[in-house]
Image (cartoon, rainbow, N blue to C red; front, side):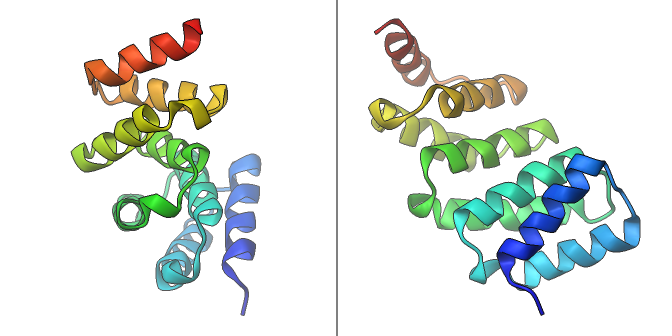
Length: 146
């Protein structure tokens, strides 16, 4: 029996090695879903980032359930972890209006707390899913020019 950080670490290793054994990925996906409420935002972010790089049958189900968790727990996610989750979803072509709104609202309201990497990742994800909110992009422009 391993904890969520171990599961997230294995996902990361599979991503780095591009190891796409279907049996292993399916087992990891099911274990992640079973243990989801034991996970912290960094672990969820690591798994989503890795899963976006790998191809396996239950990827869509994993994303749908993890992103629902992100939406429900978004206040516990740092801007960086929220951006990673958003970017991973966008990379696999999942456009979720609620998630888009959550991310741009959090960044717009807390842009002074954002770091350049997180902000860039959020902006890039908006582009990947063709999501545009003028107030957000104006805030980003002001932040970049300040």
